[in-house]
Image 1 (tube, one colour):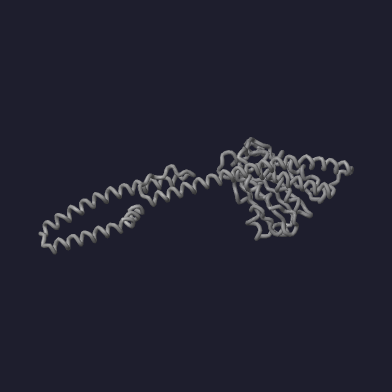
Image 2 (cartoon, helix red, strand yellow; image 1 turned 30 degrees about the vertical axis):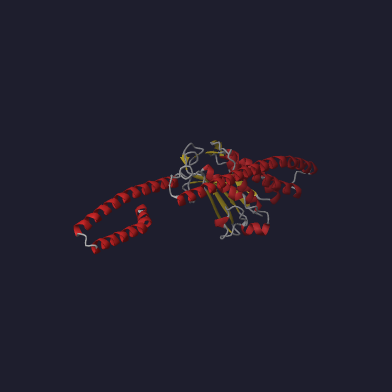
Length: 347
């Protein structure tokens, strides 16, 4: 329908000219006292020829219109599929489009090359910087004979975490990123994360309430480990006194989200062999998150009030967690009350 209306608007000008010419011709013939039957005969012939012309022109216009609509549905960075035309003005338009398409393709290739170079550089830098960090850790541990978490070791640990975060960020957007889904013992991941932050637990005298969940889950072990480590890291960082609880919550509990309909990650196998929708809960008694900050805490670079006050937040950790869990097919829910604590649920 839009094509018909567009064609009428396109043709209305010259149709009006044809009609005016017909009226002038009829008036001239009548002034010359030509018989009305002959005038009518001439009108019928001219209208018949006009109708044939309209049919051919409309068919050509419709084919042209359909070709453009097909290109619209299968848009590519190529102008090869554009319809041929004898119209000089449209030829100039197509020539301009070809120039723009070539320019865009060139800019896109340059941007992709720069992005690849940058990713390779950061990957190399992250791997290289790990060597002096490891050497510095050994030096500090040798000086610290009592095994306590010194301020230097604490700061070095933070540096290691930020380097690891940079590496995971680079890997997540890499074209070579692949996920290996396999049945994984959830307790193994949790114990590894807790062990990694054991010094922080001891230094801040935070109690850990954790009983083995005896659950296996089909997921990518490496990426899920990174997520759980980030959540525990935040819990330890923002908990001055109190405790951190790690437990499993089934679908009959208070959880408001369930696992999505994704075949590789929508179910977990419980210790008793039954299958149910469950989520891992990491709960702390820390400073909590302001209500106005909650909707944005998973945005890239958003630190909220806690980040501005403490100046130790990068605003990347939870952003990476949400992206990774989305790729893995898991759910991610955070509830918090300022001054009471935070509850993170991974489904």
